[in-house]
Image (cartoon, rainbow, N blue to C red; front, top):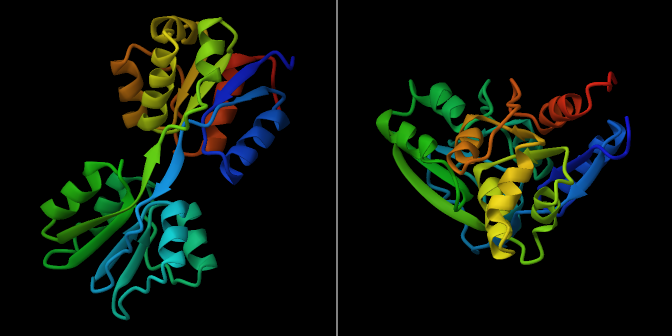
Length: 249
C-alpha cells in the first residue's frame, strides 16, 4: 500500500493515540494524528454506598483509583468493555460483570432483570449516553451519576480538518459522537466546515457505532463503514481496506 493512504485518527493524546498510530502504520497507512479529546478531571469520586457501580472507561477507573475510591463490600462492579475491566483489575478491583455487547444498551440488557430497587452508581464523563441511565431507571433502579471528568477539545486540534478541506485525506476514524462534533468545531473555527465535509465525501469515513454514525450523518458527513464490533482495531482495518482495496494483510 502506498504511504499516501492518509487516515485521520482522533483519539486522546495518550497510549490510545500511540496504539492507533502503530496499528495504522502496521496496515501500511499514513496516520494523520489529530487528538479531538482531552480529559479535564472534575475531582469527584464515585459513591461507595451502592449495590452496583458502573465504570465506562479506563480514564474513569484511573481517576477513581487515584481518588482512593473503594466499592461497597457487598456491591458489584460493572465494566463496559474489556479495556475498562482490565484497568479495574490492574488497579486492584474485582470485576463482577462485563456485558456481552460493549455498550450502554448492552449493560442495560445485562442488568435490567436484577436491579429493581437497587442503588446503581454510574461514574463516567460528562458526555455519557442517556441510554444507560434511562435504561437502568426504567428497570426500577435508583440511579446516581457522578461526572468524573469532562471531555474537551484540545485548542491545537484541527489539522485533519485542514487536510480534509484540501482533499488530502483518504480515510477518517470517528470513535464517538464527540469526535465528530469536535472535528466540525475545529473546521468551523478555521472557516472550513463545509469544505471539510465536502472533503470527507471523497474519503472513507468510519464510525465506531450507530450513535456516532447518526451524529455524523445529521451533520452532513456520509459514513461508509460501521464495524460489526465496537472495536477501534476493527474500525481501522475496515476503513483501511476500503480506502486501499489492494491491501490484503
